[in-house]
Image (cartoon, rainbow, N blue to C red; front, top):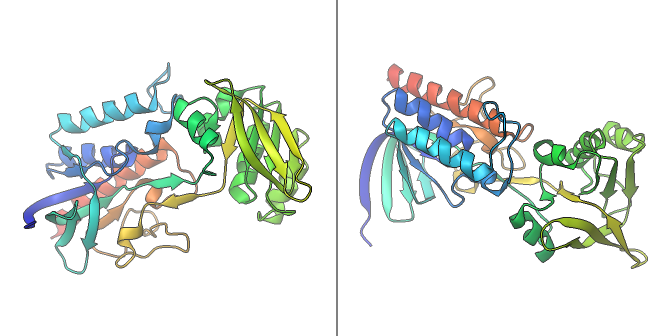
Length: 314
């Protein structure tokens, strides 16, 4: 297929809160942004049933509804929102080249990367079932912990993030059971100490998840196995949290952008600038600490403002 060419001022890659916020600001600055939705239009929020911690929604809103509203707001200011995803980039020249679906080449003066990150799950059929149903499986305690107030939950993981999330849940839930695959944590000593000293956190070492149990709508328990004894137990729980890490969606940028050891894009401190002039990053592609819709939106604003200033300086 013959490649088509198109030149624009501002390309936004990704359609989560970061991407759409960047689009709103860029469009209002007359940068005529083009936004490609990517493989998961709307980002991680489309897998979230209820969003209650984003300012401006006193009664809460579902993730898909919120993303549709952000899309409409971006389009209101004439953002060109398109289906498709980026398959290749070339940031070696001042004008950046981006391939869409391996057939369209866009040359753009600025690029805002808002490709986000993907939560890692265990890969169990039962886990995927209740994740899709929004019935008790989550990879974000800060996002969803509130829905399990005074309930019993299970969390899988052994690193700092798992310990942080378990400790957070312990303040909301009546009981938190941590499943640790090995006989030790990977977390820092201080985080280990914190969870071990929290009375309503029970730690089960050498334990793996066999199945997430439910009634067809919501989670009711977790079947676990001790890998040393092969003993099977069922833990009563209404929530199942997975804290085994996130994978940033940044693979296609690795030949041009500075990434950290886990693949997150390294941005200039206090800005959205990357090591390549005219290329900016926002949202979870660079943020491995907060990973919230509101912080992603904030960095989307930063990226658009940085891109606007960059264009003005040329």
